[in-house]
Length: 43
Image 1 (cartoon, rainbow, N blue to C red):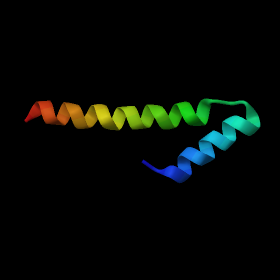
Image 2: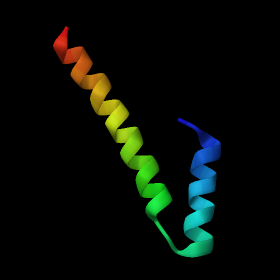
Image 3: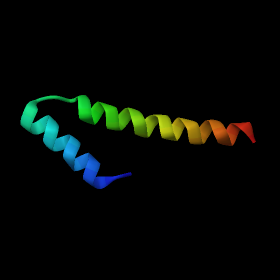
């Protein structure tokens, strides 16, 4: 994970009351984890 991106997304939410940056970051993280799990199942 990228701590700086997390803090930037949290600041964006706090300052602009906009969750989109955090939602995008969480979605990317979840997709990466799902890809990892699916690749394990393919073996």
